Amino acid sequence: MSFRPVKSTTQARPTLEGAGVHLHRVFGFGDPTESDPFLLLDDFRNDDPVLYEKGFPWHPHRGIETITYVLEGTVEHSDSLGNKGRLGPGSVQWMTAGSGILHQEMPSGNVKGQMHGFQLWANLPSTLKMTAPRYQDIGGSDIPEITDDDGTVVKIITGKFWGKSGPVDGIAADPRYLDVSLPPNTRKVLPADTYANTFAYVFQGAGTFRDASAPQGVRVEKEVAGEELNIRDMTGNRTLVRFDTGDEITVTSGPEGMRFLLVSGQPIQEPVAWHGPIVMNTRAELMRAMQDLNNGTFIRSAH
Image (cartoon, rainbow, N blue to C red; front, side):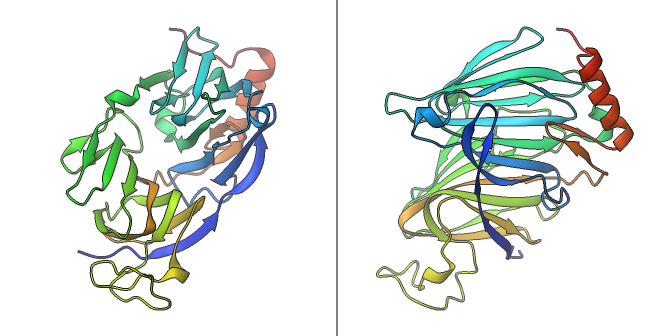
């Protein structure tokens, strides 16, 4: 077994999207090879309806898959093919845009005004760029949840983990998407695919993904498995952690526990031509998509 070291850590940055939705961009619109096959991750957690209620009116997608994971509140969605739906707390929508779709997503908060969730974009290989659009809407009760003996809770959205498989299937990048919750002061070793591009995104509590077997710095009041936790290495809310190669990840939570997304996928390793929500392989394909938008031929597939 080889431990995956941390390659980099970065903070999500505030940005505006849609009709004026305030969110935090974890990564996106940079070097697509850094997170291949993933293109973008947005954290749209917000507690003020004024900052999100205008939502994401009609907009196009082609050549990608979008994965929306709702924690609190609801998202009403509809598209140009007549599909409609409602994502509630704990639910996931995996949309394969393929050859093209126009859709809208309109968020609503819960009784406290909270609208919390994430949207991840995954690239499609050239052979599937123009495939027929497809939806997978998964309710929160259908997502497998495993509780380990130490109190660690893992929700499996897609992929296999600890002998269980997530309900989302047929995805080009063969990804694993987990929601991991660690109790306070807990050290965990999680298996990882050596050949998959892997990242974690911390959104609650704090801890460290660095090798806890060789701690340095300031000790916390409570030791974890007989080791000192390095406070200076602790990773907190809205932090992206990218990993180098290896087949296991070591994580140690702090005194308040820790919750994070753990996502991995097989790199596609193809050229990327990208303009907003349209991602193709060449500039010529991208220009053709823009022409399709302008002349009304963008939608290639019916029900």
